[in-house]
Length: 269
Ligand code: KIV
Image 1 (cartoon, rainbow, N blue to C red):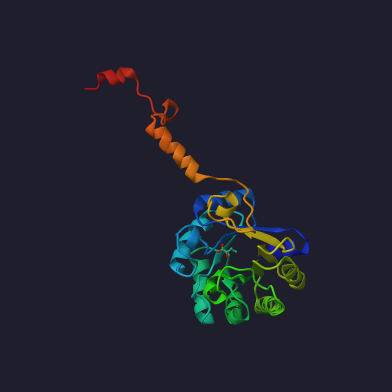
Image 2 (cartoon, rainbow, N blue to C red):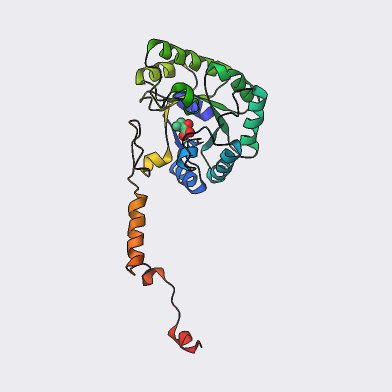
């Protein structure tokens, strides 16, 4: 976390990507990413759930362990799932500790502002780095009434700024800003000492985060405005080609098969 703070000081951008499994985490780590986020977006991306609300702490731990095994240089940050930190700070600390002890994560992320500051304080005082998450907070989807840009009017922008100051004062080491107008994210970034990481929050944040599958263009049905695809992975096309080749007797050709000496073959009875 210290090195990320230094990056902010030196005006060096921080890079963050999600990964949920060993091989993706290995690729992301070896490519040189600063932070791997085991996001609760895995609820939708991996588990096929409707939103992030139902994923459990035990499920998050399975993925965190896989990612931690792969991460040799990147910091591993895990999302604390809905219901694991909001009500009681002691419960929050107990659950955060599991991510460090069992999951081998380096830090945890919590969604919310002033209302969760007691939990942020408790966890950070236990020497577990905490990342806060403001703006569009998917765990609050029922209260927000949909996946919309946040902080668009004066009151909402002022509340976001106040919440940003509050989470920093409570001990957060970094702040994710999701779907926030560029100029508001810029103001928050200038005000705070801790780094801000944007997703749909414009270019002035101290760093950026994207979902790995979105960056690869794997999910053709999902393309929000803030996602840039850096590849056009089309799993469906690859699978169609495989089906065609198997049916047509093209795969496996000799290149993909193992030989047996005819001499031995003739001796078989
Ligand atoms: O769960 C997630 O992937 C996230 C990012 C969108 C920041 O929280």
